[in-house]
Amino acid sequence: MAKPKVAFYWCASCGGCGETVVDLADKILDVVAAVDIILWPIAMDFKYKDIRAMEDGSIAVSFINGAVRTEEQKEIAELLRKKSGLVVAFGSCSSLGGIPALANLTSKKKIFERSYLKSPTVVNPEGVVPKTKSKVDGYELALPEFYESVYKLNDVIDVDYYLPGCPPTPDLIVNAVNAILEGKLPPKGAILSPDKSLCNSCDRNESKPEDVAISEIKRVIDVEIDPEKCFLAQGIICMGPATRDGCGASCINGNMPCTGCFGPTDSCKDQGAKMIGTLGAILEGDEEETIDKALDGLVDPAGTFYRYGLSASMLGSARKEEEDE
Amino acid sequence: MNNFEPKIVAFTCNWCSYAGADKAGMMKLKYSDDVKLIRVMCSGRVDPQFVMDAFREGADGVMILGCHPGDCHYRTGNVKAFKRYKLLKKTLAQFGINDKRLKLDWVAAGEAELFQKVVNEMAETVKELGPLHLTGNVEQGGK
Image (cartoon, rainbow over all chains, first blue to last red; front, side, top):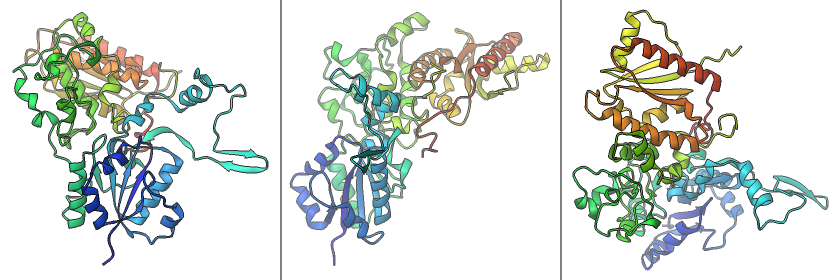
């Protein structure tokens, strides 16, 4: 029997999701022995035309990481959707937008201005900016369109499963691959990680006082962090309460607070809103002045609450019209 | 002439502000019909998700009305609502949503006139701001 065909693809991402597949270490040999990798741009050489020539549905599963920012990414995502039985959104960016989606707090116009015109290291007296079509020496050149917003994978194609994390841990990947190979998959649309909050498995949960009350929001760079005590009880924003479990608390074990890369649990519609709810309940003081002072330490709330989830925010991207600012 | 009829969702608490709205009704005080009331047990029950959901589903403005500080039926629900409101405002600003589109105020059960006043003022404010169009994944019908 022919081995099942598997594709790995990257959209707007850093490459860390490709790296984590390599991090499977010796287990990757088992994966390679069990499947036939037909596309993996970060590691091996394949051509899109070979994928186009394949029969629809002939790829068993495509793992797609990265958010969707350009026309090319959408095109390949659509192609892989057509050719694959299963599509797995691999990692925070394809599940929720990830770090690239922080750009949704600005606009395409501002990004182009900064990158091609105003950045101190740019010399561009003619003000040339990338265009989807341009003529050079009689040839028409094309570039993929750069979209106004960064999208998560399920904004552009139908997605069967989600592997959360920045990046997903090797354990989660092995479990997912085994589940696929053995045909023991949960219902479509499932996020392949436990549906509990991170606090549930956090070692510091025991250290949490009955009533957490914080009078000041502190930034990680400004304080010496107690390696035993609940981060929130120390006044440091930890996204644990609003974040899905399954990462093995690797950041907490490194004495850093959770930044939320696993996204929310199934019962939560918006990770940022949930964190606002949590923080609102544990901030100390009743007076506006005390509250404002406590919140001074929170310099970038949207970037903190939606660090990996802006494409999934109920509020969408920042509005582009100026009238409201 | 501004013909825009805004949609405003007002979360009102069962014990004070909804009772205030009820009294306004009994007194036949007219208030803007752009404002749709949703009764909740306490302003502290207003999950920030409710507010975002309202904006996402087409509200141009959202109000949270609770008991005056110290009068909360559940002691501190309104204070929690206030803290969430402050956090929400700070966050909404980064999404380019004018901070006047979200308003929290205190209305007691007897304050029918005050209810009428805050609600009408909000309707005026949002009318001037115009419709709210969210962009990005919402525009795409994001899943």
